[in-house]
Length: 299
Image (cartoon, rainbow, N blue to C red; front, top):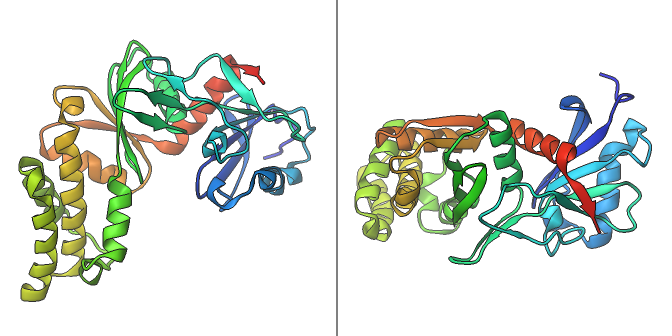
């Protein structure tokens, strides 16, 4: 598809990856991506990283670029200060990158003072979900390295809580004694659901249950897919126990695109809580589109 009709450029700039789309309204004309995430760039590296993906499109410099994610962090291209909840996921202003070759605007993240919490990028996915599901109230879960549980009411983010579940799984599965038992691409769905329910009912026993995964392997030669599913289930079960005030008795949506998101749906279903699964990329683009249509720019 030709990029000649491009009206604006959508950008999702995370810690590890950069994704860009040439947009005509809400229609994607072209897309590109790289591993030039915020975490590997110095401040003068953001412009070249973006140009490497978009210059081939041959667009004029005045085509606006709407960006979300860690590009607006303190270590990003320019800091886009957090907005305080309760508030709508998108405000009416974005931050413009000074001195950039293109007209680049960054969406601010959200903050919660008590208990202290922050998000960047998720606010755009939330805005996309609400744009596609008007008048929706309930709780949105965004699984990932740092999973978010977000209370939504009357179009506003009322409160949210972050869990380091994904990061804990990565650290434990690669850097602890459990690494010897869980190295597998396989998965055992029954072992996962059982571990979720077991740990959700007694989250205070998490540390003991984790070691039992290793012991079961040593004594009973438990298959690695079973051990891996048990580790994930134990960690997600502990998260669900802590997040119970969010999801219990609420309408729940999960924003994600990978197996982890589906595991959250399965874990909640085992507790009698149906959850709607929404595609993360679709929500991101819908949120960036909403920002492009409604937001103003501030320096």
